[in-house]
Image 1 (cartoon, one colour):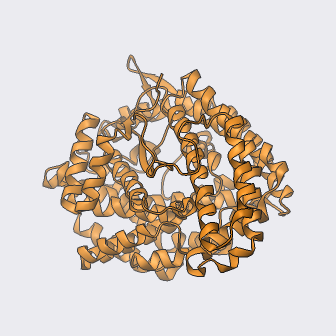
Image 2 (cartoon, rainbow, N blue to C red):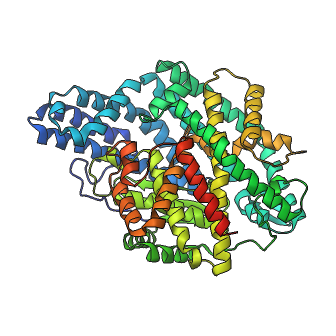
Image 3 (cartoon, helix red, strand yellow):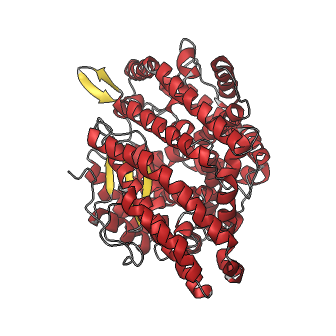
Amino acid sequence: MNLLPFENLPAHSPRRFIPEKIDLGDWAQVAPLFDLLEKGVHRCENVTDFERWILDGSEISAALDEEGSKRYIAMTCHTDSPEAEKAYLHFIEQIEPQLKPRQFKLAEIYLAHPLRKQLPADRYAIFDRNTHLHVELFRPENVSLETEEAKLGQQYQKLSGSLTVQFRGEEKTLVQMGRYLEEPDRPLRQEAWELVANRRLKVAETFEVIFDQMLKLREQIARNAGFPNYLEYAFRARGRFDYTPEDCLKFHEAVEKEIIPVLSDLQNERRRHLQLSALRPWDLAVDPLNRPPLRPFEKVEKMVEKTQQIFNQLDGTLSQGFQQLQDLRLLDLANRKGKAPGGYQSTLAESRMPFIFMNAVGLQRDVETMLHEAGHAFHALAIRSEDLYAYRNPPIEFCEVASMSMELLGNEFIEAFYAAPEAKRARRKHLEGIVEIFPWIATVDAFQHWIYSHPGHTRAERRAAWGGLMERFGGDVSWSGNEEVRANLWHRQLHIFLHPFYYVEYGIAQLGALQVWANSKRDMAKALHDYHRALALGGSRPLPELFATAGCRFDFSVQTVKPLVELLRKELAKLN
């Protein structure tokens, strides 16, 4: 039974090192390939031989990556499938723990090989740097801990994907309930919001237990690697060579100083338009003039068709790329029961093709998510010709520039979905969303800084830290009577559970994307040209160079934030 939306995809290039027929879920078949690599390196007589050996290692890494990705995709598309769950768990329990020490061994062999110093320095500088990091951090005793952590992540996904409510006689997923928060009928919005909030509260204890177990594992992983806390370990493990925890604190301060005043202005304007004495959590998504919600599409097929129209107008290369995803059925976009929450793009590393997963229900936010994930897909397509697997994995901070830029550039052609007045509303809604997401990013990131720099903290202390950050970044919203919901609001942020410290990247990248957008207003053709050039570099250059190639500054202090906030204010005023 094939649980994947797509059929078997061919490898981008014919296999040279791996047999065409092999079960990559059977370690007994995989292990001999690593034996061959370890022995084969001794036959490398020159740089050409050594580079071929590196590419053989790339080939097996890509094939195993794709195998794991396929099992993850099947599991998230069908969290209620025992077959998908079993296959995914088999890979993370039986393959990954065997794989990690063998990859570590290859990294050691590479670093120690006499031919390494003869490799072209410009080509291999980043590969060298990242391989050194891999060897520096690897601890055999952490492999089993990382497996347990991944299994807990699957439990979080399974629980999140299973949550539904009964609303007016129908079973609805929590994602589907989001539609009602845009309705002008305030009692309806409140009813929908409270139903979802109470459903989450019923499983809050389970989320806390899962997270406590994850936290314990992460703190042990950091100690095993010789770090005083997980914060310092995570910054190193995430390869954050170009910025520090202190830079993130500067970002939080820039958000507080420059973004929060704009957020407060928007919230006060919303409150006045809605004629309310105070904004409540169920008042934040409705149109402030109480117009009916934007409904960009009813059927997901229409969303795909209209998105194609946007790319047709924007850029020929992007248009062809998006059409290719449809032709190869590399999309699973509609929300349904038993599907994991959220949206993602996963690159199938051997076929070098992107897959997009999301939970569309007919909201403007779905259009933004579609454009966002398409940006990631275009990044994957831009680096298909890169044979070094490591360089087909760009740093997350720049991956998100690819996606967030596409939201802004695509929204220039949002008339594909709307008539002119609604297009204006959609653009304003998107820009307001950017203003609103910065404080949330700062909240989530600052929360993780607190969590992982306070080993052994209690739940009560964690709750107090979250509450303080909500006060600092939450804006002018009254949570009176819903304090318990606010205290557990972080449970909905899957990054905190699944990808610790992966969230500030969205803030850093949003600053890059806003710069790409600003450039496009001066010269669209040049902005797109620079965008394509930067994407094609993959992970072969350091972050500041990737940003510079895209026409952006790599900096997230007040100095960079201030002019971008002025641009947002100016554009919002135009759309008023």
